[in-house]
Length: 379
Image (cartoon, rainbow, N blue to C red; front, side, top):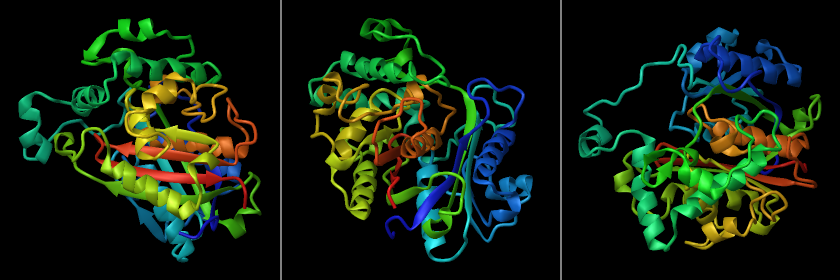
């Protein structure tokens, strides 16, 4: 991808976040989309590309009155939106479309207008994992976590530290679901969900959504918002079954996606001012820091413990409070992207002074997929 050839000209979340029983899932998509279009000064008729996950692009385009020239319905879990950004940038560069709307909405808490949950018994996981007792992310993610803790001689306190420090960021964010300070004892003393995860090591369950609008960098200069440029992108997938990861202590998809994004961006790790790592559970920032190359294997826990990612640290991480304290409707990648964009615009609640480069990294499924987007505010 050409550096800085595509820019974000619209980015917004739903009007409300948290518990929104009065809106269905598709209404959340539309609310976020209309908010993004309003700040970009656009109408639905100005959009000629649509990408979404959770709902079909067909439904979103029809609901908003858009007849697109380009669509993307990639659905690989929570990092789908990182991939949408990458695919949309490629489409704009190829002249397949000019203005792309990426939407997300999820009634994760209220469950209004959401397709029923369930897993086909004939699926790979249905055949080869579920019969052994794992069901859903809290129990599935424990499989690699226990190996990781043993391999690097780490403790549950190391996981709890992630939750504690991210709550510090949440305290700076008026829209965060939870802002009260946490201690390690608070985290360890919360309800046990699936060893070693306690409730405060697990993501929130909320309603909400977000939308992003992309266009060429050349056109972006004519929009009301400060452009945020796409510097580099990456994507990959590994396995739909967490039990089949090649290395329980590392994600192949993370490594491939991150390396490609950094290669495209042409930057070094010490040039990164701000970082978002999808944190459905407290272990994911540890894997992300290591697989993206910010820390050596097994050293991320100490890096966080030493407050490098905390307010005032050298690598601000998950500055909204993340999925653990800000919000998490189910597919969190959109909210990570939104915060990276806010940081590059200079409008974040916990703004990092002078930040010029932000990395937004997502996971899909149980380490099944990954998407990475690197943003900059310098043309």
